[in-house]
Length: 536
Image (cartoon, rainbow, N blue to C red; front, side, top):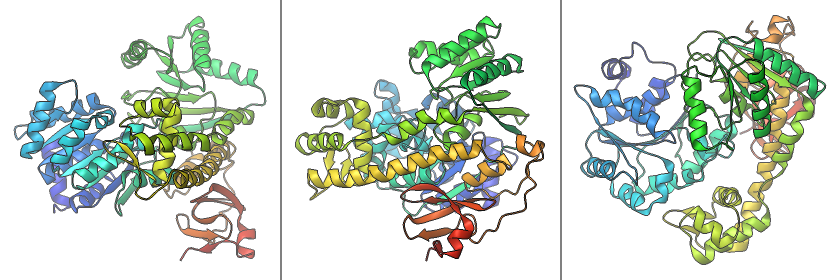
């Protein structure tokens, strides 16, 4: 196995790096030791370099699964053009030349990278080709997309675990820029990572100036937001909750003389591409967007990101604000907050999969063994979105397996499958509701916002940072709270079960419980009544 100096030399020689960034070397070493690895590193910290270095060091073929194949292809082009270059092929069902090149690379196990989107896993011939190969590494980029706790769940990612098993279980490297503990847990579960090394770091973005503005009424909030965007300098993004709001705000900004465009999933693919390209080329200074905008946007000079409403989770919020200031220069982050606006997020968190949907999907799988979402939707007579949610619950309960076809686990009846998935759904709703409340807790927090955010993602940081609204207003001089359990330690509650200590704030502590999500607890009450104990 390569040592630290060898990995650094490989990075200099093949990638042109002067030094490795935090988390890169640790992740590469874990992969080279044959260990499944989950690397949770903030946007712009060089996650792509991890699988490039690991793949180069291992030799043979590295499979790269990514929703952004074109971006990955561009990032690997320099390797293929290097004097000691490696081959890069794209496994695309419609590109016969690319398929032949990928097939040849896999069949002969030459050093190289085979790129594919998760949608290719729906093709049986692709699964057969992968099963016949023996790659040295599987890299899963944007791995949070396998999780419904992430922003943009992709059901085709559910096939990945079966495909990796069919390939002989080579080391699997999952890469993501945002994954709080619930997301990490689901990535490990759904990709079937075996005792993975979990490398977390790089969340600290000291150049982001964090602020929250709180409003009692919607009209005042919208007026302040419009004024703020009009007077802002440089390119920026406003995130809103609905398509309608995106269109209205973009129109108001245009009337005010701001070059702005709306971006949301209701636009055609061509319209979305035109807006994205125009923003990257500085034809538009402002994009007013729903969560549909952002993935693959590599614009280093975004000077500000504003939110008209609080997102449904801190994970979503941190990923969206992470698109600002990638050049390292200061960038302003503002949340325009009304507690009443959380009602919509609470409503969505309370919804989910019904037992009726679980029954329809489990029955269709038991009786027909459908091969894809479309066929399953037709058989179960449900929309694809409802199928995806039910399928997620059934796979989480480990009562449905996905390969060439969907099928129930051995010796599992339909009723047993529904009962198991329904229990998973109940716990999931509890966690979803708690995530909404954590977003409110951040907005209403009176201390250092940077400290709060980093502790949420498992990084220890002692504020004040001097670069958030609370610190600049001198509101963070409270004495350090009593911490009877270290942050990051495991504890157990007689009702809520096991959990992870996340944060302390004055007289309260936040614990992320495995079953019911985040809970704010009175620290002294917990310790005096022995309601929290270290988990043995």
